[in-house]
Length: 449
Image (cartoon, rainbow, N blue to C red):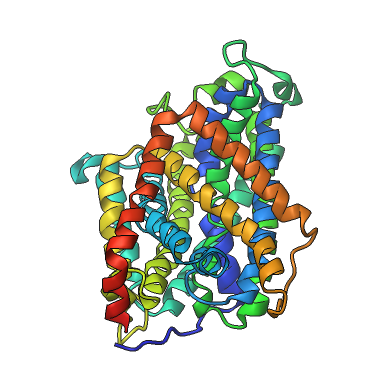
């Protein structure tokens, strides 16, 4: 086994990981449930804008840390530098068991949801079976050299951006049903509340989730001091513009009632809102065409997640904070094959057992606890290690990271209040890592030593 990663990802590949990991299934599925939570188009659009600005604040903060510590592991590395081994381990533990495989499983199930509109899936076990098949395929692909996964990511991201541009232009300029009056509609059955806005933002944050993926693979990025910050900032800005435009198109093309009745956890058998919007200018052909097109988007996000998330347990094992086999690299491809395969097993189990919205709730809630800690680490490291080289410094310091932390705390508190069962499961899984850390750490350290 070789012990060195290959820096085979250029700027285009790095930017494709950011954009491709973010644009997956959420923007096509989440708008309906967001409308149910806040009751009118302007509030939904505001939730998308606020979630985008919050993600940008996070990306700006991560950019400083990513340029300082351009190593595999991303936020795990930053938390270890700022707070020590236990906090870093709990982050990696959570990503290993929940965030990484949960994201991958959700993309698989989301892709199968779209594919179901064009193909019968009962012969392979329905959506869960198709989701598992997708997980296994992209796992095998990412066991090859990292340059292969990077090139695939660049290609699929380019295709999905063209597809989304086509949908945006079609809805805005060619839909005979487009009407600005739709923006003023409201639902008496879904009244606006601040708590509802928080839940809508949580749903939107799932669609934006993935901007933190690139730093996990920073050990394989060329010129990481430049390419990691640049890719993060430009990638999040591009996705924010795309998301706001496509949601504006939804609400122009469709009456609010059509969006409220679209596919969501409350109405799983209905067409996704994106398909309904496309049907306004493509007709019935949109069901098949758009379903296949959106599968490409979900699978591109899955590829980026498989590639990046497996680097966290690899980095932990290299530091003596996790099972040693996860830190091994293939002698042929020099990627962490064991970590990739174990990740796939967990993702397959989650795809078989969890619904799409359950999976995304677990992932977003648990992830944002650590996102807040990472952005606070920018301030901690400025005070503790002012001597360290900082090729990039976050714009608006200290207000940008402080704003991110403050809003993250409010979102986490709102989720605890409104979804106590899901939140309790997420917290329990994080807390389960504490006894494991203290019980196993001596053995892991000994194995490395």
